Image 1 (spheres, rainbow, N blue to C red):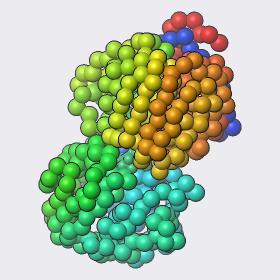
Image 2 (image 1 turned 90 degrees about the vertical axis):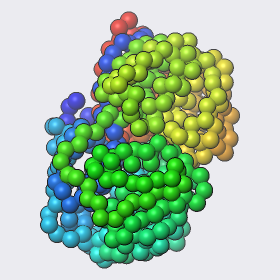
Image 3 (image 1 turned 30 degrees about the vertical axis):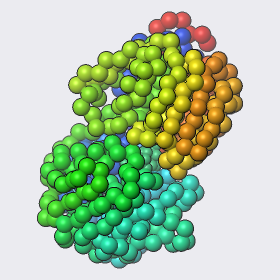
Image 4 (image 1 turned 135 degrees about the vertical axis):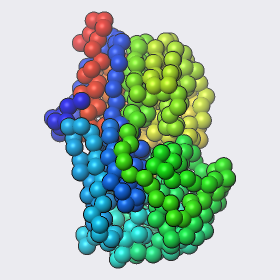
Length: 440
Ligand SMILES: O=C(O)C1=C[C@@H](OP(=O)(O)O)[C@@H](O)[C@H](O)C1
Ligand SMILES: C=C(OP(=O)(O)O)C(=O)O
C-alpha cells in the first residue's frame, strides 16, 4: 500500500462510483486497537520494541507523539514499511510542559490519562471539539485509589484532563464498565509500572468485552500475565516487565468490515488475508452476522472469505462489536425486512452520535429507520443517492461509501476523515475492480 498521502483526503466531497460486482482479495491495514496497545505497553516496558504492520493513522500517530512527549522513549515511524520502533531514552517519564493534543483519538486519550500518572509533574491532555465532549469520568473516579490525581479542567468529566503524576503506586480500585471498556484497558496496561499489585474490580457490567481480551492478549504476547475473575476483577501483579523485541499487528477487523459489507450488498466475493478464527478482535464476528443475513462465509486460521447473497433482516445484539454497527446497518438497508440492532447505547458517545448519524443519513437515502435510545430498527428497501454528512467520523464516511458502490449518486462529504483509522481507505476501495461491467 502506498505511503504517499491520498490527495482525496483533502477533497471537500467524493462521489462514489458504482460497481456491478467484484471478486477480490483485499488487504486492510493493521489493527488500530492493537497498535495503540503495543505502543502503550512498549513505552512502559523499558525495552526496545519493533511494531510491524502497525497502523499509521491519525490516532496511532497522535498516541506515538504523545508518548514521546513524556521523554522516556522515542517512537520512530517508518511509513514505507509500516513499522514503529519504540526505543527507551534512559530518561525518567516527566510531564510535558506543553498540553498533549490527540485530536479525536479516544482510546489514546484514555490510555494517556493513566500513563500520565507515571510522569512526574502535571500533564494536561486534550483533543478536538468532539473529544472535549466524550466521557472520562469513570476513569477519573478510579485513579485516586491507585495514587493518581486526575481531574477534568472544566469539572465536566471530559477533556481537557489534568493529571498530577509520578504517583501511580497501584493498589485496589473499582471502576464502572458501563460507558467504555477503554477505561479498564487503560488501568490494566498502566498497572504494568505500578509499585504494588493492582486490583481492578468492575463495579457493574463491562461493555465491549472483546477489547479487554485484546488488552490481555497484547500483554500476554509481551510476556505480562494478568489474573482475572471473568469480567469482574483483573489483578496485575507488580514487578513484571514486558519483553521488548518484535511484534506484528494483525489486520484491522473494523477496517475489514466495509469490504465484507460491500461483498454482502453487491452479491460479490471478498477474501481478507491475515486474519481468521483465532483473532481476539470482536469485530471479526460481523462475519457471522452477515452469514445470518444470507451470505456464505469461510473462516480459516488466517483468512476470511465472504460471498454475498440475497440479504434478509435479523435481530442482533451488537454491544460487543460497537464499531461495526454502521457496517451492518448499511447491509441492512439493502436487506429484505427489518434488522433490529440492539444494546448499542455506547454509539452515542463515539466520534459522533452514531445512532443519530446512521439514522439521519439512511433516511436521506430513503430508508426507514426507527431510532431508539440504544437501538436502531432498519427496514431494507431500495436506497437512492444522497449527499452524506460524515460528522468528522471515519466510520460514517466509510460505511456510506459502501452504499455508494451499489447506489448511484452517493456523495461523501469530508472524505479525509477516514484518516483517523484508515488513511488508505479510498485507494483500497479502488482495488475492487469490477469483474462485471461497471454501471458507470
Ligand atoms: O479499546 C479499544 O481499542 C476500543 C474500544 C471500543 O470502545 P468502547 O470500549 O468505548 O466501546 C471501540 O469502540 C474503540 O474503537 C476501540
Ligand atoms: C470509537 C472509535 O475510536 P476511539 O474511541 O478510539 O476514538 C472508533 O474507532 O470507532
